[in-house]
Length: 167
Image (cartoon, rainbow, N blue to C red; front, side, top):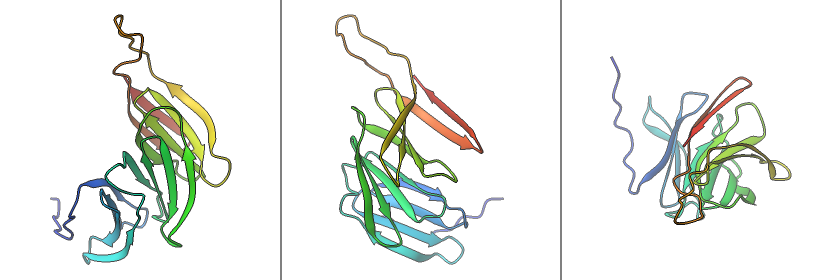
């Protein structure tokens, strides 16, 4: 039977919530806040305020160790070190708002998915943009010659396997 812990209340929208490698929990809010905490003791391990992480943030991801957080404000991707509290890199991404972000486990890569159906790979410790991993079909309206309703909806990793879905 699941055990329910009532540990934290956030004062704004929670943008991301993840279980980290060591079993601690991390979440970010729409108004600058990042918390890493133990669900067993309900105590904060780390509490950060990041000005760039705000109501304009469209996607958030933590790496497995909780030492890095990546977040997107539309098409600008930021990578922030949670230990040193320094912004490591800001990357101007492909055209279109980023809606999904994930750190690739055991690597130096971030994968981003957006409204235009593209899944892009970025390296967060060096030159930024690496490659387009895939693109999902183009639904083009006959009355308007532009892409409509074309999204990356989810992706997942396991060892050297990457899976992605969209429409």
